[in-house]
Image (cartoon, rainbow, N blue to C red; front, side, top):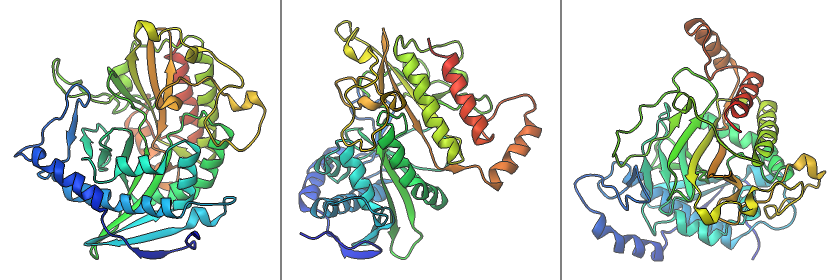
Length: 397
């Protein structure tokens, strides 16, 4: 079947019957007067978005829309060599009561394929077969945060200008991942718009969750390498909530990476240099800790190789040293996992859409006057990159 022509287009999209049946069969046991935690042992701090949740309507539209959008990708997979049109195509699918736009769909379909993410699995996780999860974010933004029911994929609402930045940088982002297939950059898997009736468009992104699988994770951190507003009051002892802590919460701690440390320092340099070239700042290094079991210690994932098993689909040959490859752990989410002698560490760079323009320059000036002698997030891209790399070097061994 021929692939759809590129450019803005519309299609009538119906909700998938199979997914709706699954959602209906699950709805009876999710009803209640209040949000409730589900499966506390593996979903600490995550709230199931059931029918009584204030975001249930939005989540349901996202699920139905993404099912149809992924089906279009399954029916019309991109073929041949990548083209500029892959990065500019907009597919608008009209549903009952809303429409969902898929931005740069062929480019993201190619990226998902290169990462080994099967379209059918992607569709099943994001479609209406199971409820999305909401978690308590310590972010200052007004964004809404979701996880797919299996916690594999992360969804976040974005401002229009942030989406414009991501799409403008997308060709270079894809090229960077091809050149450095073991990059720490979060894997962006889709960008979409959603509009109810004739209302204003909402935008959201989808990426692989850095904190996956989450079952044994004990601590989570969001690190920017600065001090101002970088403390989170930890959850009370015995609380079921797991919060994402910040820089000041990590004081006095280190990550013991063993032979993996040199790889991490080099990859941080490669990735932050790339972001500096894009004039991006205010991104975060997400970190999480998981104690290794006795039979998991000393596995091959702790050994560094100049050329080793890589992700599928790397297409740009370069010298092995410049690629900074490593032997990946044999497990899910291997690109974001490093095994030290005692702990497994989940690591990824996220929030890649803030550009150092006039507004950020003025914010830098204001913070310099308000916080003399203290470090804050709004600095030049070069300073931001250097400072975050220095933080990682100082807090690893």
